[in-house]
Image 1 (cartoon, rainbow, N blue to C red):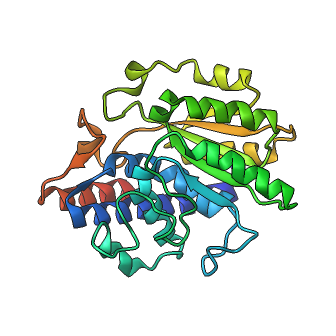
Image 2: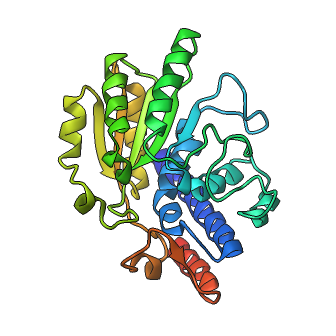
Length: 281
């Protein structure tokens, strides 16, 4: 790795740290939430917003922007943390998370939040909406890309596989999809609720350019995003990211059930301290 690459990824590591910290501070406002997911996906969001995507913080609806569509609306706390770090949402709004009249509701709502491209909640819809958005951009002659994040639990939904077929049929090379494989959903381990492996083989057979990486390895995530953007083939691109729930806070990583975490009042500072310790290690 070159010195420039090392410096760049150090910068991204700082961004990922701050995204995780923002998420923990928001979670403390409500005392609970989808903290495990926010911590596991922070590295992917750091690469998305501070390496891969084109956008203007002061103009969140700029027509030339790349779109980031959050299918798994319960990950909104993670995306808010990234939007705050990107300067799209003011830092002071962090303290309003999940409160009445806040622009940061617990599930993502496009009508409320700057930079939120779709309302999530009913899982399995994000990839379908992204296919439509990609078709629309192509018909307008735009070179903007659509990034969409969904979760392994959404692979249970038939609409996801219909979207996978459609994206390949329409040769949507402006679509970069990211699936967060943390093997956790409300009903238990995702692979036990509905087996989906071998995932990369299935996606490739459906006509996608597919990569699978450790979603908590910044070097690997950067390389995957770069390869997805530079792929010359007229096909959609999928990055399968294996992640660790609660990443960066060891005592949250160790919890057996961490789909929706209740954190005791005294534990928030412990979580922040653990995050800080990992930053300086």
